[in-house]
Structure formats: structure tokens, C-alpha cells
Image (tube, rainbow, N blue to C red; front, top):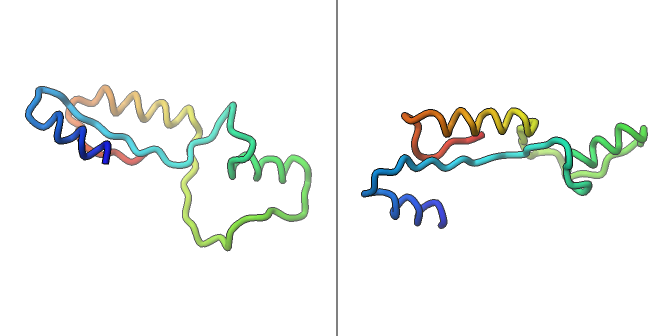
Amino acid sequence: MLRVALEKHFRNKNVDFQWARIFYMYGKGQAPNSLYSQIQDTIANSKAEFNMSNGDQIRDFLPVSLVAAKLKDLVLDKNKTGISHI
């Protein structure tokens, strides 16, 4: 709803509106209860099992440094407007 409201607000103004959708970012300072942190903990502690869902989800994990680079490129691209998936 926020994106739609902002698109309407900027529609007739001289503004390049960009909306970035960021999915499954990981990196330093990651919340300890996040999926990535839990997987890292399982590996680091040589645990035999990892409790998770049935595994039918598709997730693309990106390091925070790559997300930052993609956001920078998006902001600097004056030809790019609308929704971008990162």
C-alpha cells in the first residue's frame, strides 16, 4: 500500500521513483534467530539435524555487500524506475 501511495504521489512530479524489494539478505550483525544464522550455528557446532520447514520454499540469499552494491547501481541508474527485485 505504501508503494502504491508513493507512486500516485510522485506520478505528476519530476521525480524518478524507484522501489527496491530486497530478499533474504545476510551478513555481519545478522539476527541470531534468522534462518541463515541458525544454519551457520548448525554447521559450526556440527549438529546432526537442522529443524526447518518441509523445504518447498525457494529463497535466494545475497550477502549484504552485494545488496548494497545493487542498491547503489539502482540509485545511480537514471533510466531505471519502478520496482526492482534485489
